[in-house]
Structures are given as structure tokens and as C-alpha cells.
Length: 318
Image (cartoon, rainbow, N blue to C red; front, side, top):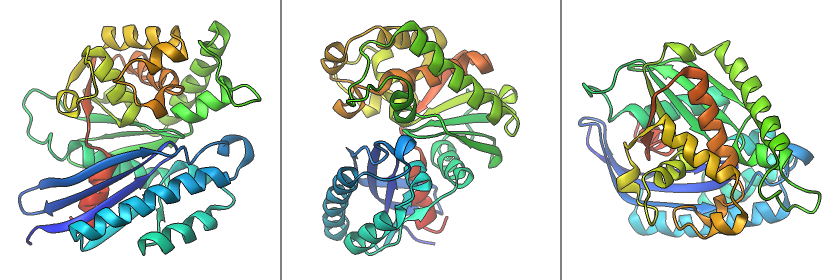
């Protein structure tokens, strides 16, 4: 089978991302042509209202218009659009589906949590196969805006579970005031409330996924990669430096403690933190830290390749 030019779109609770790549199933190589992200906060208020907000839909559709132009210019022959946590939860997801179909000509696949987990596992581990310095099985953890996927496997998925904890969901649930602003910094009581939610969710995940049996923790998505960039002391976000970085527990704790005690202005002044993550990164970091404490992981291997890459491989028929 020859390489195919494919486009993959991952629409989550906080961001929408595009990857256009040449995928060669014969060699296992995925060659990026364009990879970009827009923070659209599609999940704004979904945990509270059960509906996608009009302004969130418009931000998302604006990104879709941009992506449609890129896909057309690069000549992708297969396009797959996967939507995750926010649209699973929304009463008015038909409005979202119709808007995407009009703009991109494809129907978004609203995947289940388990399907999301399998795609994340494929994207994160395909290029780790055969690494002598990493023990298996892997525990792949994808910390999103609305949910977190936990997947254990070696050559494929052995067990997976999606739980409803994510950086946006927990921030809105515990840190947001009635006017939409966020407590800055959070109180000790608020941090403890977030931790309780994370612990409850991990207890739920552990009923399906043998978290403690994993030998290598692989962390995905913006919360994890941002924590890695901060732990590495980068002066700007650098995906090349972050991809496959190995961040020890002590550094994750140091970064998390700093984020939980910093102000909005202090976080916003750090160029490693995307502006769209300034208010939600502390909750995301706390999910990672609590998971490492739960599993006893000494480090996290950070991957820039995740569900988006898994969607691309699926588009290529691999």
C-alpha cells in the first residue's frame, strides 16, 4: 500500500486541531505537512447547561473554515473529523454536526470514550515500538478538556476507560465564579475538591484498567505538554524539545505547585503556556500529578503525538 495524503481533525472540549500528513502504512511513517491548533473552548458551560453555547459553536466553525482552506490547498484525499467529550455530552450536538458537514463536507464522528482511548494509544505508541529503554505495558493517559482517557497495552489496547475529568470541566466546576471569572489562585479547599474528583475518577478507571501494572507512563495532550515545557525551563513552546521528553515526578510536582499558587497574570506572562490554557492549566497539571502519585510512576514520557495521529492512521486505512 502506498502513502496516502490524509487530513485528521480532532475536536475536543478545549481545542480543535488539524493534521495533514502523508501516511505510509508499509513503513509506519507519518510525515507532517501541516499541524495546527486553535483554542475554541467548545465545551464552555456544557458541564453546567448540557448544551453547546452559540459563541462556542461560532468559534469552532471559524476554525473549521480555516481548516477547510488548508485541506483543499494541500490536496488531502481522505478527511476524518473526530469529536470527543463536549459533543458527547451536549443536547444540541446536531447543530454542531450540521455546521461541520456544511463547512468540511464530512460528518463528524462522535466517538465513545473507549474509541477515543484506542485512537490515542495508536497515535502515542506507534513510534515507541521496539524502544529498549522503555518497559511495557504502557499506560497512555490523554488529559483533555472534558475527559481523561486511560489506556493500558503493549502492541495494542488491553484495557481502556474514559472518565469525566478534564482541565476545563474541573476548572468550571470548582474554580469558576458566577460571572465566569476564575478564582486566582485557587484556595486550599478548592484544590482539595478538585483532588477528590480526580481520585474518584481514577478509582472508577482502575475498575477497568490495571493502572498499577503499567511500566511506562506516556502522557498526551496540551496539559501534559505544557507541564513538560515548564519543567524543561523552555523560554517558548518548542514541540521538538517536548516530544518524548522524560519528566520526573519531582519536576511535575514542582510545576504543579507553582501553577496552583500563581496568578493569572503570572501564568499569562509565561510564553510556554498558550493563552487559551492560562485559566485551566493548573487543573490539568493536578490531574497528571495525582495520577503519578496513584500509580507510583517515577516519570512521564511526554508525547506530542496523540489521538490526532491515531485519527490520521485510521484515515489512511492502517
